[in-house]
Length: 114
Image (tube, rainbow, N blue to C red; front, side):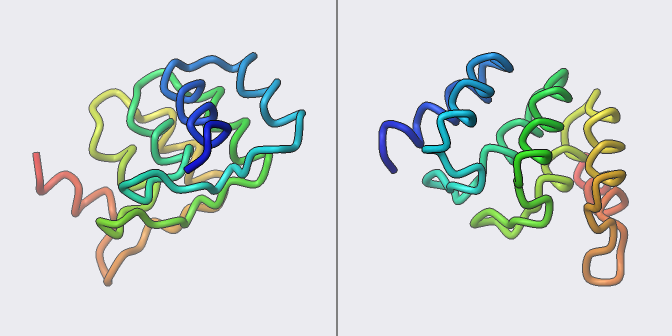
């Protein structure tokens, strides 16, 4: 992963919308880049409550709502596992995230881990 790739994860983790816009406008970062866990910036954004603006921006700029990390989790699965992320869950579903996984709804399978 390059320093530029590190930068996108850093601005997403800090919920820095302006910084993310600056990076994306330069056209030198990939919104679907993976970190060591194969998380994309969208996965990372879905891990924190209150990142709806970041999630929306990433999706608008081409982030794949169905990307899977090394644990085979999509951003929707990650968001469902975090308390207080209902706005992000709703946003992902509205923007096309598949709520079915192996015949069960992801929301149901994530609630079983609580």
